[in-house]
Length: 85
Image 1 (cartoon, rainbow, N blue to C red):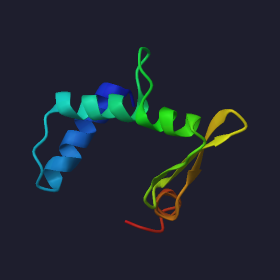
Image 2: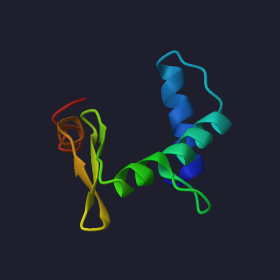
Image 3: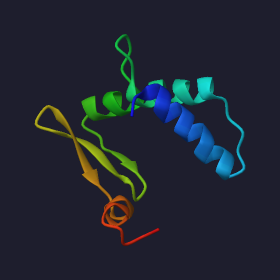
């Protein structure tokens, strides 16, 4: 899934929850979080300062010896294993 597909899927998921957002706004949020070629995103900037980014029970981004690492949370792990809807 590329950025445009992620933005479209996010718009659909938000609509299912009663929220109306535009695809362009979703793409801007994705850019702000993950960054672009020209500008680092919030996650990268936070990791560079040796801080972790915890996304609820989805998981945790952290720096590990100069590299970015992701540790899945309980909700993501259970969903991938088919133990939650």
